[in-house]
Length: 229
Image (tube, rainbow, N blue to C red):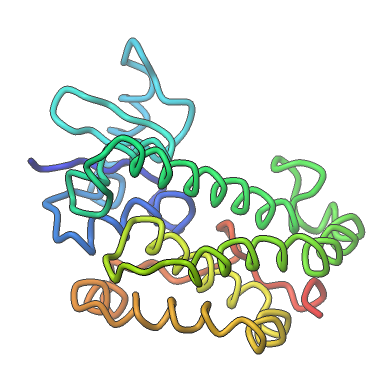
């Protein structure tokens, strides 16, 4: 099947979690909004369907139109060989992906704690307070939760959750380089997972290609030195 991915063309954002799964699996897909007139096609589809997605990303797979990154990955996981076939296994991965979705929201809200419709410069004081709490309390909590799971993992098989954790580590290193360097000194699993995923042949080719949009200050992970330790 040829999949159609719909997401904003200039940021990694939530769409990147889906891109990583498609790229790692070597799936046949089109990143619609990055093609000529793709943005217009994406907006038309959001307005014309009887069951419109709230926002990108969404995926067209045959007659299905599936929204929300975690929901898309739930659908793709077993089809791309990135999730177990059993229902308990698929639900467990979905639960972990939803936890990652919570983590994504908290990382985003560091630089936009008041409202996403305001510029960062309009909420810098609040962002500084939010960043301190994120660095001291929330970031270690998420890292330690997934670190404990990594320590229990016995199988070498990669899942879409592993790919998403790679993206979280890469993004957080970009946004909080000093804090992540400090935290990772006692959490060797994070660097090990990041490097193992980055070395997978298809992903290594993707990461080195123009298809991988660079991190920037318009996406989820933004680097403002005043928010890092």
